[in-house]
Image (tube, rainbow, N blue to C red; front, side, top):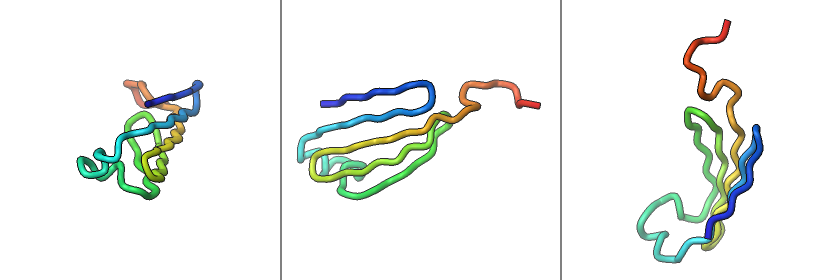
Length: 68
């Protein structure tokens, strides 16, 4: 199950995954993580088989030219 809501600035997602996913990838191990991509800064917390992700979108995402 994966549910997400977002607006122009923020992103919130809740993910329920099977226990077997913990053996497949380290992103499903219990704990707090944060990472940054080209368009968003994301924080994630995993408790048991639930993952909650909160993201803050960057203002300059999608621009090709440097702003002056």
